[in-house]
Length: 343
Ligand SMILES: NC(=O)c1ccc[n+]([C@@H]2O[C@H](COP(=O)([O-])OP(=O)(O)OC[C@H]3O[C@@H](n4cnc5c(N)ncnc54)[C@H](OP(=O)(O)O)[C@@H]3O)[C@@H](O)[C@H]2O)c1
Image (cartoon, rainbow, N blue to C red; front, side, top):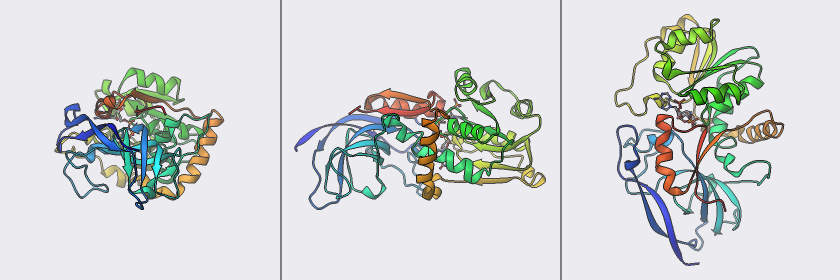
């Protein structure tokens, strides 16, 4: 099929601080529009790419994580939604839509096809939702809320980074479960979305609170049963003082600590003992056996109009570096996706 120009985003070098656009390089390379004979690989055209906070972890030189670092000078990898252009794999045919790990470029040759999932087109569901609501972040919300938080009807639930890819679904699932839900977010616009669009009972801008312990006491005078923690740091410490006896803390993410070389310590861990709190970290990948039931449940809720999903979509691969970096200053409003091409 020949060679074509291939826009790409690469990591320049390992970083130690918060990511900046200049840590990434945009260039126009070349792609061979074919698949090596007998390789079982597929060549895809990337349509949508997902910006996810864990990608920051892959930008540092650290080999003891659950996922290896990116290589400096190489194209970034991430979750994407793509169309198969050529295939040497009997499970995939040209024209199939797939989601899974792909490159931050227009065309990617994917060798590890076992991690690709065929996507069924449903005209009622935007394709890009397979990176958010029906993708890894949505699944994180589902597995974290139902499996780690052990929710009960009527419980008091707090969610941080509540308007983001994961948080917005956690809050809506908690409401559907009959819980009282408060979210925190970093701007008035996001607070309004939480209260007026996503159905949270209440929400506040944590950046405007000088005393997080007092703020949480105001929103939860009776205490918190479940904390779905997307941020770690000072907010987690303040939550611990506001938990109820028998409460659960699901440690999903620590985005407040990502740009810090010397992470903040916690002072209030004794609450775990006094209040018999279960605090548990989790990775969505530990629960992948639940993915089919997650899809059935969330698609049903979405089609019934019981949940909505807010995306922040930028246009063109050129916009990808700024979109990724923006996660760490809260520039995204909803799930951050990059549209590389619509077809
Ligand atoms: N455990 C797992 O398997 C798993 C899977 C997916 C994601 N995660 C984690 O879940 C969390 C949310 O991910 P997401 O994809 O839904 O991202 P997201 O919420 O869509 O985007 C990140 C948000 O984090 C907030 N943020 C950035 N810097 C912050 C800081 N210093 N302090 C407090 N908040 C800050 C910003 O919102 P504000 O404007 O509200 O500050 C930003 O919009 C992340 O920590 C991520 O690493 C974990």
